[in-house]
Length: 341
Ligand SMILES: N[C@@H](CCC(=O)N[C@@H](CS)C(=O)NCC(=O)O)C(=O)O
Image 1 (cartoon, rainbow, N blue to C red):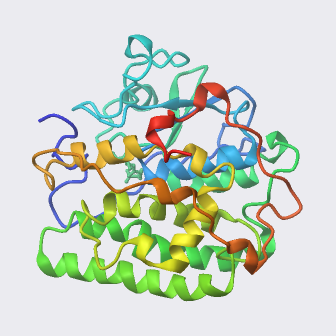
Image 2 (cartoon, rainbow, N blue to C red):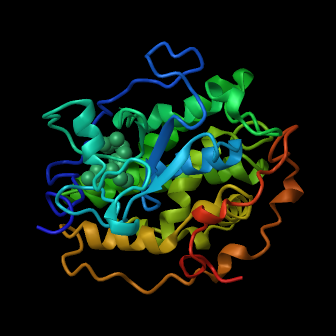
């Protein structure tokens, strides 16, 4: 089989159940797990196709961690050894010197029976995987890497709002972030219908909330917005068709479409998004649900840059902080993988 072990990118054919991240060490300011936050020590490995990894891409940009935490971008198409660095010269990550992300997993734990997933953070000196805990990585970038944040970095997980942020994120995770996967990989009609209905029920509730306020919690961008964004930005391109979440398109919902465009046009969000990687990954890797591996031509991306008028709701995107600077040249998403200006 080409990409992924099961034609579903490692997601299996049984009722869809997301595995818990196995490597859950934390990189913290005090280094209590043995991994102190430090500039230049770690490498973030992502696929720009992956919504879970894309959270870390956005956080890293918003917080200005590009110099402190370097970036490896995997080919959007895995092979039977999973994520690989075929976009780099000689097919090797230039810093870690490896061809497959799995080599960093092996250095950490030999004979690890689970899958290789992104996002992953690798310790550069030892070449060992530190964490693939996608739920914790961004929270730690926001709260444990503060000494390395840029000047003017926003507070993405403000202490006073954490309960509300956590509860919104839990609902969004269950019904939206993971709900689209449960719909897409369902193997029975009932399972699909329940997941799909749950996606749209939650999106309707979020629509109500976002009619009144610019961001999900408080009046600034928080971790909750990052997590909703990474699913919404993929919605019409892959979840609507490939995952059959097709009650309506995001671009048919004026509130959510404006909300996601607002974020997309905010520095640090849209500049991390590669629609070519997203579409090719989903449609070519999950051959269990798309056996021809044909990648559709649409949707038309030109609407992403149109005015959203969300500033009329008020809100202070970066709170007392400022927007991030330009994308480092080496990390720019190719222009033809984005909407044209
Ligand atoms: N670590 C988590 C979440 C991250 C995740 O699912 N990442 C996907 C890409 S979107 C991945 O790398 N899956 C393994 C694969 O496709 O082989 C998991 O294993 O479920």
